[in-house]
Length: 281
DNA sequence: ACCACAACCTGGCCGC
DNA sequence: TGCGGCCAGGTTGTGG
Figure 1: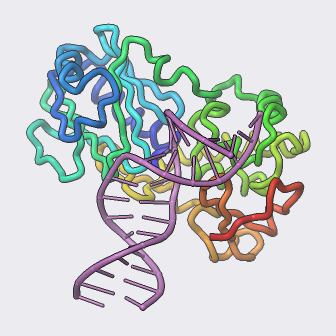
Figure 2: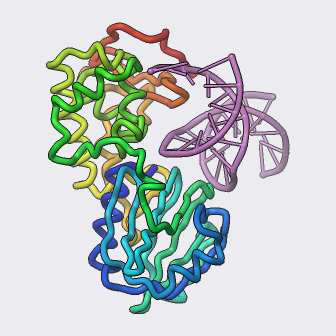
Figure 3: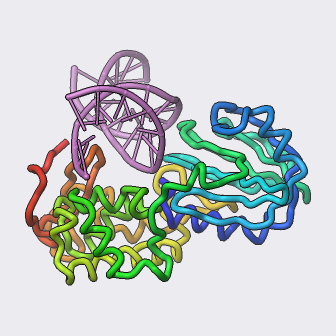
């Protein structure tokens, strides 16, 4: 699933190819993916607007356009963007094609049709409630400690709460907690200063490393060039239920925390104060 | 404030 | 091999 490192990788691939080019129109194959405005207006309004810059906020991609609009999109679980020559064949899972001048198009593919797009003048209506960017310079260990104090929830739940920290999803939350040696059910506000420091380092290290690997190609993720990412080969706990822990040789377990599958090593991430007994599914 | 659950979807996997 | 049913999970919305 595209999380911060995957979206960041996509952004970095698109910038040199797309910035400075002009949208000439859109072909919508799944019109319900357009959240705003109406599908018809979306196509009319995007045409003629030049891409001035591309940014990422959390797991959202923001295309700032010349006509005061911002194209905002979210890939959700199975979305991907492909840069293809114009009039390329349209794959069965392609939900929208954004046509650009210069002889190429952006294909928005999405097996599960969860992905969405907006064309808005005020991007805050979409991304305004997101939390802090974990890779920004102002995301310090002290700040993380403050954020943890404010919420009485399991640390795993807090890490994936987009309104607190933006961009961390299920996979990287598990990886960061393993790297920090912290049990996913530990209460956020009970972590020691030392643990907060380790977690702060782990979060940034795990995300930065994954960007370096070009993202994790689990499920359908691919880069706009069609290349896959390699971060999944470096996962230590995510999707490794029953396999050996690389650090201690014990068995990786899977529990459910807040409705999400959660992978961890019981030996390397000892249980502290729990909110509830771990649930097995 | 916190948590659970349904809804949005489809393909892959499980068990029979 | 075929078929039904479950499961994955980001986000939003509802309700306890």
